[in-house]
Length: 182
Image (cartoon, rainbow, N blue to C red; front, side, top):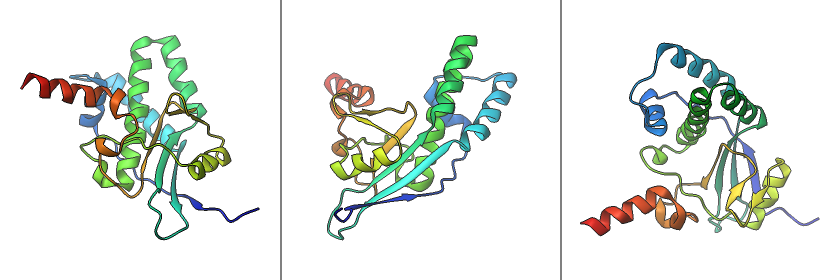
């Protein structure tokens, strides 16, 4: 076997729940006490199901490193059950899982706070690392077999200009509409 061209290092994240950020993601203006308590319970539960990795090239002059943060199948099952039992809670849990992976990524790379997390096209080496973790990259859909995942360049390399999904991103499209109306 040849030498590996990319390292895979498990890292610790320190996501902090930000109610304002959650409300922005969920589109809610207020949250009832009962739902807030459920969100707190699941935040702490899912925080234990969070996986985070740095992937860095072994060659010093290469610049295709990545940060990968994702929640496992148990979280996805919790969200699915919530949708089946109570649609309102399903959406609340879905938005909570999104908030958790994004806050975890931001705890590692503060440059991501207040902006989007650009999705790069992963290298062949990165896709090999995904397989080692039991993850699969869908080339045609530019997605992974996990619902709640952040894959972004590491270290930070910019926003939309480095994103593989810029043309299909709703945020990017809204910015373009704003420019057309000016």
